[in-house]
Length: 388
Image (cartoon, rainbow, N blue to C red; front, side, top):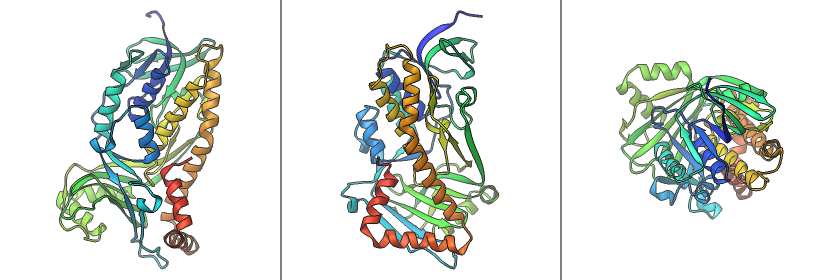
């Protein structure tokens, strides 16, 4: 067995949240090892609201968003459920909130390239293409075993290793998980008519069919439905799948062509009772996961990173027991946001699936109120964008 290495911090997870966290921790002055196993390029996109975009700019992770993204200026909701009580078609415009855009839609590949450029400039950050295979708490902090057999004794551990987080499991964090029979199909489409800078959501009984602008005539599709329905649609072949897309989008956009292959992902929710303790903190899907409703996934993960960075800035990193103080402070900072966002997204998703007439009436009435009352619309803008 090789000698045990020492590290002030280890960040586990090679996704966008993990990379952003590694940059934040290293920028705080900690000698940091980032465990980022190489994987296939993430061809998905992320709709980031303005608070997340501003954080990325302030943290020097991206420059001008127009260089790598597309503005989201409107959100259009169309109730296609065919239910007895349906909601009105509703349009939200960023101009009502005095904003040039609600946010930006980014290619995950381009975000990764920008984050990696920022990481490469940090002398305190070392990236290793390895996975974590074991984690044990001890009197000196946390002992990590890596996939090449190396052992690293770390003061601070940041778990950004996704829904099946080993850091969460071995760090003894309690989590609640709930699976759904629905799944999400994602791909890029070329439309006969562009959707401009408007994200369009067709709400169906098993979930939304959402088109997000990706520049020109291209749109990113996220279709949520029963897994069996999505599997059958994809298995029918490209021509039949495109015809299904035309039907689901009410034939509003003329011709439709597949620009990328369609991929299907299972849906579930994960929530932890606390996001930090004992010198370990959880960020991104290691701490929270839910269906892609309201574009909150990466937005919430970046708010995790922002709070971690704020906690690091306010902590004496030379004081005894600083990791314990930091992890508890992080858990305190994140608790209200995690509870609020998880509750809102869960309620929205379940309201789409509700078959009971009182629930349908409540949802339709809520959208009527948002459509008719500017004060409520303004509050909805702030909640949807993650303002705190």
